[in-house]
Length: 436
Image (tube, rainbow, N blue to C red; front, side, top):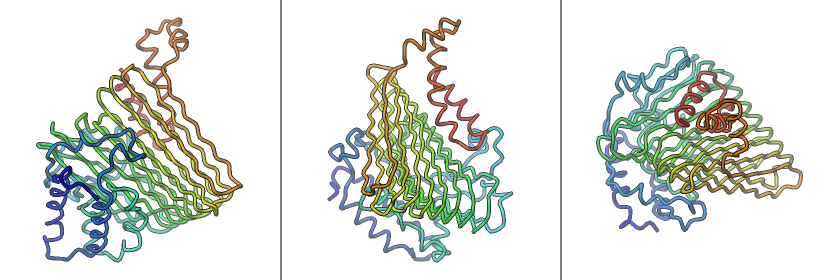
């Protein structure tokens, strides 16, 4: 059971934030039973500690110490939106401020007929039947205490629905802004349903306005129906006082193709969880991530790919660069169930440690119950090879530039997994700036 003496503020403020969520129009919460089940699951599981194997290297207690207040309603300014823009990216814009969908500042022009982009809270209240079969269906509340907390107390976020056979050529850029005039806590919930043989690309960027500490607990559900194609990219660059726990939960139909990539730059303590379930034969699953850590940053990446259907393939590539006193963690697990014959699953984690007080921990895992599979995993952690630096210096490159070039080349493998050229260029610029 959860120790309420150790985390009363988190629960109290989450409850306060929810109290008024459905009172504006007097409408009842159609998902009250599911929220109650989620709250019970959270209170039973309690907050994870380093005694839990999956959280062995990540102590959340410092990140949870501030007396966080629920994020108030706020608006994005023109300056906020200008700062969030990605040069050269022609995209529909969805604005989410303090966890709430902002229809006024969003720009949904150019999307095909039938595509729905709306606030999730409004959808849950006004059209619960539209999401009854997908909302929360594939989230294991008993496995993830923060997913249970989000399911119990989340307020709003994005609802995206792409009809069968529709290709959304224009990417969707989701701009997340969190205001931090005081220690602020926010829970955002997204539901993205991409129909049979449909296609969509979603880019999420995160920023904080203000100097106070923040704690963000996000949950994104992606449902890719048969033969759907989904490209999902997240860029976390919120500042060194921003703490976060996130879950991307993906459920895939037959012959679907889904990739989800996470790039973490400025942050405090971050835990990124990804769970992918290729549940239909022939599914393709791609997971990738890059984290550049300095100062006291702590970035923990945890992935689970659960192969339950035959003939599927999953590919994972995660890279981290740590310096100063920072820490990078990767823990990835691949399950191959008995029915999932002819599965191909590949997993790779690589870390570069630049300082004696920096740490990188990696734990790739395979658990296989089928006998006709091709699965492999690998993990490497080390420093920059002095011979490589010497080679560049012998050709007139300064030592600092030589090291930056080698690190940039190391990181660029993950950037190349992004399908949008303007986003790749934007990420390259961020990486180059970060590596100076």
